[in-house]
Length: 490
Length: 95
Image (tube, rainbow over all chains, first blue to last red; front, side):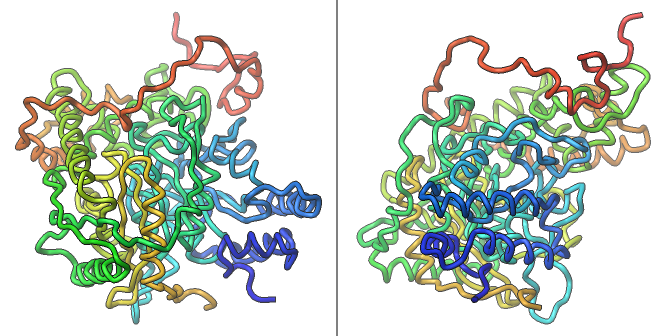
């Protein structure tokens, strides 16, 4: 039998439907791959017994005509989603031993559809980072390596474990969350497809909160079609999240018509700074040509406030985080460090439980919200955020989608980036759409001179994921990205 | 925007994060570096701009104000570091 782990999710779905293999066989193949790639540190918790148990149920459902859309398909879940009865850490020391008594809405939907969870994936602590190096459980490693350079590379972040897990064929797809680029940037670094839906498309209930006006769950897969299939299950209104939208979830897979004739694709001038990486600049030009050849019309656009997006994000996100993370106090769950008074217990628990980056962001956020500084920082950032959103609103009056690079560089070596602000710059192309609440997708489109994967990003209007999948499908076909990470098989 | 040690101490107290004295100066430098970079936002004219206060412009749904869940204290206390007779245990707060 061919290697079941190298099937796409859509192929595995079809294979199970035709009885070519069983869900247990499919799951076992992935569990084996997960085990043999432990050096990637992609998973914080593996749940092989639970997976086999669910796979058996899936085989039963498949045999009795009661199969769900994702029946028997092995998926990995970012360890930011609460999973009932399974350790949930957010990659933080402060959540030591936390076993949720409830299931997040998104993972409940996947479970309901028959998916088999193989494990919980590594991430930056509380999803704060762009390299997966802030994890209390150590960095996840990118399955890819540079030509002639054995140094381990970061998988990007914060959904780095999910990206590595998918790229290393240990699961058919994974969930990620994206606050400023945490799905799209690691997808680009690992040569996979990462999709951030419109803010409000997926319920945030049961996902450990980072910045509530930005956080969105989305699928990470090896193909655009797989992404569409997963999102159709993950999306939808949830009364438990008032910001989740009560609008119909379209058939995203059906939106992939393979035809972009007459669509207008915007190319924003501000995404091409003078010092843009040459490989990435070339790949972007190539992407423009591909879409043009497919019949799309290329339109030059301007998003004038782009350069203010990162500093805006680094006020808004830490401010919301400082508030959201106030709940970790050592009283109700997780780590407790004893103190002489209640305040002392809080301060010691939080000092030991949070890592350096998380503390930095909580403190920046606390400062930005504190008396006397609120207007100068937080209110100012909210106003600039409005201007960034309005830039997109104007642009979408003349275009249907926007094409940009996903990241300013390919994956870098573990330990290579130590300055916080330089690390923040990784998200320069993904943060603006996050602030504006737009859907975005990163599609693997080529390799750097060093042999590392590079992604191109597509953005669309709010609630127009259909156009995104339609254009992404065409881009994927034109790029015909078929490279495999070096580690694979070796 | 340069933060002094006293300001960092004040932020740490507000954030309930214990910061040893010897860490104040390096932390002040690091946070000042980030705030200096953020300072560029002051160049943007926002006099007539309405703040964007959330991720969506949809009107959020209201729900009835009623209890819809609960009644399982033992499940919630299962994660508590020091459960005590059906409650969360904390250090003594009243003399």
